[in-house]
Image 1: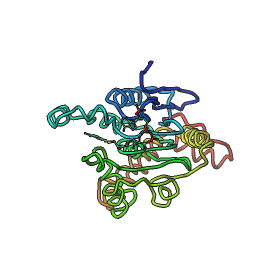
Image 2 (image 1 turned 135 degrees about the horizontal axis):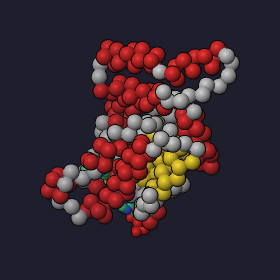
Image 3 (image 1 turned 90 degrees about the vertical axis):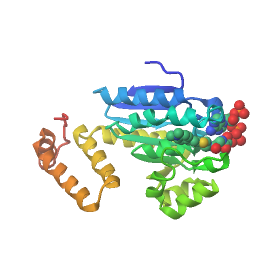
Image 4 (image 1 turned 30 degrees about the horizontal axis):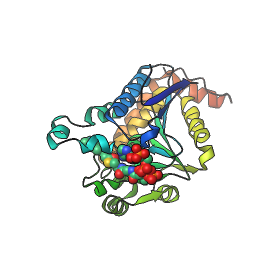
Amino acid sequence: MAYETIIVEIEDHIALMKLNRPEAMNALSETLLSELAQALTEAQKNDKVRCIVITGSDKAFAAGADIKMMSEKSFADVFAGDLFTPETEQIMRVRKPIIAAVSGYALGGGCELAMMCDFIICSDTAKFGQPEINLGVVAGIGGTQRLTRLVGKSKAMDMNLTGRFMEAEEAERSGLVSRVVPAKKLMEEAMSAAEKIAEKSMITTMVVKEAVNRSYETTLREGLLFERRVFHSLFATDDQKEGMNAFLEKRSAQFRDR
Ligand code: DAK
């Protein structure tokens, strides 16, 4: 399907989704977020897709929600219209793993979109921030919640209150991103991580995503019980037999998602 504000390529079991509004530093318009949500839902349904990578340009992953679009809206527009809620909920329903490959600015809604992905690989040029306070508003899709869980209260307060940007090295040190690589190597690294994930049993990758995300929603005791039960349930799959037999037979596993 052709989109106006994103480019989607599916190759070797990986759906690569590139945000494409260069004139506005990939600012998240309603069209962009809705197209992204739709593309992700399609990727979820497409049996060929086993992992998803979302990226932007060298300059910007996304510089936030579109300020021009928001500047024209009233309280009633954003409240009754529930700006961005259906799209972000649709994105959160995707069960396949999603990697954010971030170069340049990931600000406001852009930082929040990256945090909605399962993990972030960034280039050494990446800059993360929640500068909404400079616009007289606050973060609206996770900048005060997901960021706090990822980097802790002190840095989340600092970023949300001062609006300062966090460089790649600090982002890795603080647990916001999983890896930092030279800008030229970003896509190679992200695609190679996606290829590794795509080789696994998709049942297992979806279970991992569900289990890790559950840790945000529940107590440690309940989370550990959930983990134990999904571990037990994977013994009902052919892929568990295949994975363990392949190890014992010293060969690569051929998973069938069964
Ligand atoms: N929106 C619209 N246009 C943007 C933009 C944005 N967020 N960011 C950049 N642009 C546009 C600029 O206006 C400029 O357009 P022209 O003037 O050329 O037409 C073009 O991109 C290039 O930008 P600059 O000329 O400013 O480039 P610089 O290299 O000098 O600076 C910058 C790059 C990224 C540091 C700067 O552009 C900047 O500070 N941008 C704004 C960053 C920002 O404040 N982001 C937070 C936006 S608020 C919600 C959930 C979430 C949200 C809202 C609601 N709900 C659930 C209800 C999210 C809110 C936000 O993200």
